[in-house]
Image (cartoon, rainbow, N blue to C red; front, side):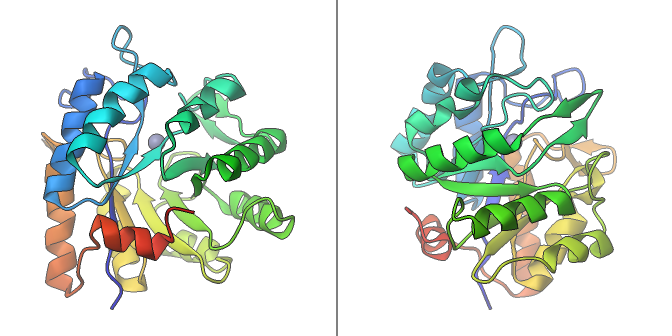
Length: 274
Ligand code: ZN
């Protein structure tokens, strides 16, 4: 059986302390939480950083640097840095792609536009072409985030045009209020279009977190958990750390009879560095 990659999504860009009292905000809190997630068994961390003044997501490279340096010093984690900024606020392209300067092994690549809150999370074809070209030039593998079938079609077209190189790595984002729901039927509908050699992982937002993790487990995929996607450990019980969410899913993976991929094994599975 394939070993399972567990990614921890540490903080996201929007959830504030009023609803998520334990969410990491400062670069120091974010790196500390990532290191704890690694100790719990995560091999990849998906990072946003927050403006310490406003608490909202930021694409400031210095903030990323302060979060990334301790992680690189103390762990062998694979870094997946966000290029979304604050989805729906649509920061300038150069700001969104600025974290590539830190040469993470992975960076998020949102393969299309979608409603988000009261806004639109804009990812035009022009932006996607630039992002794909810059990632290729920087040796960063795109982690292709798919919220609906249209984004899969966009990805397949870019692959055909030679803008995205095999083997692709997908992160299916299911259960946002505006995209595909976190249901087996919706997931399978998109999954059927997965190109050959691709690797993939599932995100279930909110109550979808565990169901989608279970789908990935039985189908040979990989799993993302973390406070960016769900702040609850169970109904009415907040997770106090990202490590708790990682530990729980790893317990389930092991009970199922699968093993967890180490960072070195994850690099081999994802063919990193590219
Ligand atoms: Zn993210």
